[in-house]
Image (cartoon, rainbow, N blue to C red; front, side, top):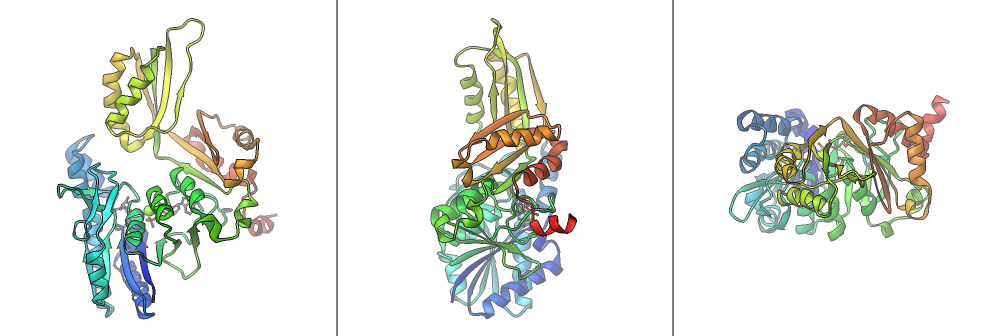
Length: 419
Ligand code: ADP
Ligand code: ASP
Ligand code: MG
């Protein structure tokens, strides 16, 4: 008998018929003699709807505490409905919300981080022969305020709960049948990856492959939780995310670049003509950090030809743009900024691979491939195992496909058929 955590994303619980399918699938696993804990997301589109309502009522920057109180309701609905569907299928089941489990988080509303999870109630529920259905995405802070874990946060709820209760596996059921070399919805030649290391998955997730939220991969890696990403619409084996030494690396390590990711969720802010003096950049980014705004890419040119001013460009997530603008409006006065330009029509495309560590010329090849399509690069960032370029959003598909083909990732079968 195993203890299995099964997480279902928004598309998998989009309507009652699909919730019934989820219940059937969970019931089947329970009938095989396993203990089952289910984590659910909100019905697809529901969180977006709730956040749009928050902006209607609360303006450009609604009160974050109330945003979370509202956004968490999406998962409350599906948790109760899933428990009912299980009961209808003849399986005793009980739903629990984040605060009932006691998923304790910090108080960074809309992007809270889990501190501890109390496994007692979950354990009691399962031991009493019931399937425990938990609302994902939500937690509670020290003061009893409801918090949420950031977009895609149900993945993190699932993996963190799996770690807390020592589950044998955390299955992530979604609308694709595994992790692919790139988003299969925009690149038909993407290939399913059988096994992927935590490290590579971490990079792919942090660079926009939203199939798993980045925090979920961090937690899986820290606690050694094996994660199985698979489809809720088929029985096909999906992708196992686990440590590198648990499988033969040949599949990935043969490829210098293991995957291509893109992130449309960033916006570029340029502060024109700020003073070119020591301490200016520290002031700008210090003020942003104080407001808990994470900055991703940064470019600053040194002023040349005796000029006293230069431009500073950086990217933040689109959700943080309004708050970043208000921070910059203040700090801009202090650093002599002439103008703030915001561009949200950008995308960050990235290549990822452990094999890049030992290969030179990968970045240059990426730049060439983008240039070959006439795509201009607006910012670049690199690490040992990834290269990212910021480009105009309208080139997303073109860039992803060109990089996927250029780095030899295309599915061979389809290529041959098309040849
Ligand atoms: P869920 O609602 O089940 O959590 P998400 O929409 O958050 O599902 O994540 C699944 C989506 O992730 C897929 O539909 C796909 O478009 C996208 N995706 C992006 N990159 C990848 C990748 N490398 N492999 C698989 N899916 C990816
Ligand atoms: N419902 C939340 C979202 O849409 C959490 C999740 O789906 O994982 O971001
Ligand atoms: Mg998701």
